Amino acid sequence: MYIEGDGSPYIDRYFVAADPTPSTPVALELMSKDPAPTLYLGRPCYFGLARTGACGPVYWTVKRFSPEVVWSLAEVLRREISRANATSVTLIGHSGGATLALLLADRVPRVDQVVTVAGNLDVGSWAQLHHFAPLVGSLDPVIEGFHDPHIQLYHYAGAEDQNVPATLIAASAQRIGGSVVVIPGFNHTCCWANVWPNILRDLPPARTITSTTVGQH
Image (cartoon, rainbow, N blue to C red; front, side):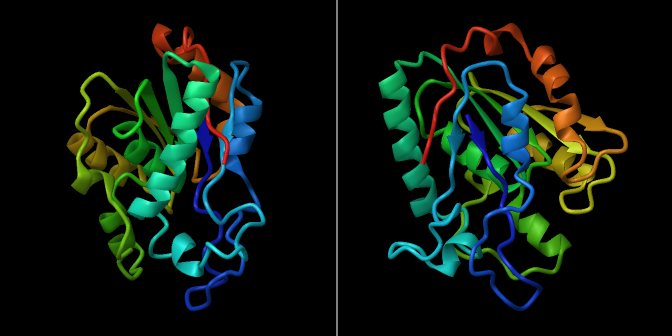
């Protein structure tokens, strides 16, 4: 199951976007390279839903990782797991989608692996790094902690990533667990799809026997 990044929450540093849907959907590109059964878990208020009644800019700005966002995704994920009768699930998230993957993994049964790509694993430190206002109302994986030792965590970082630097990902992984692979020449969006089939092949055997990868919002 793939979860997209934060997209474009803001037009610039001062103005909120009317629709945060990413123009470059990295997670969708990765999914297109995955030969296993896969589904795309859309984030609330993205993909044309920004102007619906339940949505508001807080849900793609300061509350993008809020308990209600996580709860909404978890409800869909549990339903899809049940519908597919999945026995094990891999969550794959890019950027802020990695944040949500980590927050979901400990709340949804049958998740056995989380793979993060250029993942924002420490929301507070990331906001400080960029001099952003704190994401008040959002959950943070390093504060929440990771409680299920049976879930395997794999983190991939781009050596040239200026959005979520590899050093921040490595420091975060020391707190929440998981192995870190830094790929030279890669940044936040380039060139993950090119190597994604190789990354999938390098994951441990448990990944290959997953009965289905689930989720659609």
